[in-house]
Length: 116
Length: 109
Image 1 (cartoon, rainbow over the protein chains, first blue to last red):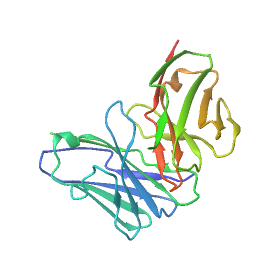
Image 2: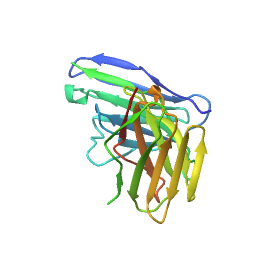
Image 3: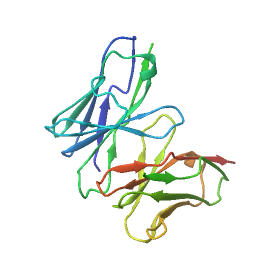
């Protein structure tokens, strides 16, 4: 089946620094990738949808200048959390899919970010 | 607005059967999904329904009624490892996934 990887799986950083999370589709080309955030005991919250070669579409309330998304190729999307603060500590999950017809999104294993 | 409702938490006994319900109100419908998520892990795909009826896959079955905006996930012969959150999600007319808050299932021996 389709495999999506994320790197790193966990990261601890100091407040004010930036962190980059990579999401890769290993055995298929993902024209669309989704970035989610999940706080403890809460459901997934879609942050943004990125399409290869175009700007990401951010959900309401998500700061696009703080959460930079780059989908430079059909197998790689990156999320950079800029000037991270403790409230950004969360579980970040990416998923990949083919739009308009694919019935499944393939999830990466997630990245746990802790900002101290 | 778009809304997906499922119970917050359910408890069941090992070896028993449990049904997790999901009701939805979305702008359009292009399929309903069930995902399993263990604590601290990413969701894993369980089932997909786009037509009315029951889809069976081993110990897990999923049912859909589009006219009622209703689905359920049925888990049989419960095992301790089935303790997890179960997420219901609907793909709307824009093919965007709308997620429910998830149902935490607790299995007791």
